[in-house]
Image (cartoon, rainbow, N blue to C red; front, side):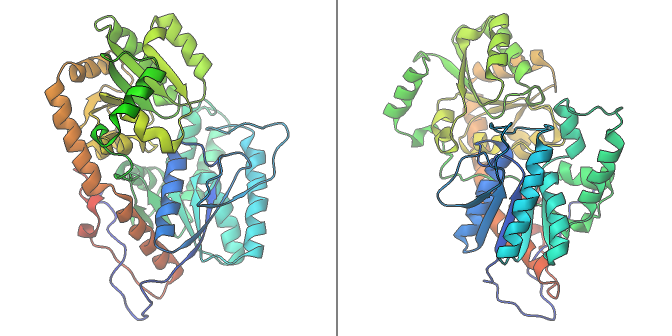
Length: 432
């Protein structure tokens, strides 16, 4: 399938000032901000737009971490559910109902030019109220709704609910004015599995701030030494770093199994496992595998602290199993110049290119083998790390993404202006 090539520059009939500023309502059906995955994408998109002068309001669940530079509007709380929502949950029905009420309240009180909806629940809310208020909707697609529910063991493919939910997902996917996809694989899924029109889809990969996420040489050596000591990692130890959610579809169990195989051969290797939830569950698994003393569970790491923690690593790992979701953590690893081992998935190939190291998907032994290969080859680590850093700088900077977002807004808000972006205009158009 050919990648969609439409976007901005070519104008006909109506001339609009290129510097037009938009009032954007972002709908985030999650406990924003929670320092992982789609939250980072929402955060960086909003900040990138604000740097260009656009006004962004984010409407989200009651729980989450407030950020001083963002206008975050929250729903009312749910008394029986006080903690963060991660992944599929029956409680999200109540959260999304409250999110819908908060969204219509904002639309009645403020003026917005465009609704930028994240995740399928956000798109559904945006489409209903966007039609009511005459506001165009852009859907930021980050993976299949039903496939994610299956990954989270919340839905069975042979269950009664699968068919109706799949049909609802198809309607949500086909209805928005425009859809952002974080990978070409996601674009393929939309066209082949949900019959979306190619011209409806605009690729916008996850990106990274390469000034903040930078190689370890850019950090204070004393601070890194101090952090290493706080974590209880010996000076001579080699470190594998992981940053993200802890879950089976993220490959956490496979990673711990791989660590057991690595420890049998190398006693100086530590895994810095940064993330949540399910920490107690995975500690028990680590204990059963005999690697408790070589796995450091940090719990949640604030996004602003992530670069310093990642700077401790010799190599990074991304054993995500999902075939439809994005993998934004790979960009952070790349910008840090960390040689990276990932399970062999289309999204991992798309980001890492020829500079990634790929293990057989779902195979802990293969994962261990690839990690060991890098641990034992310092020269290869340096070459791959440098190459990944260059790839991040040249292709995946947020400054590129910000202009693509604005161009998309112009396209759906100003229907009298036909806008096209040639393939050469965006660095990620060449997917090799």
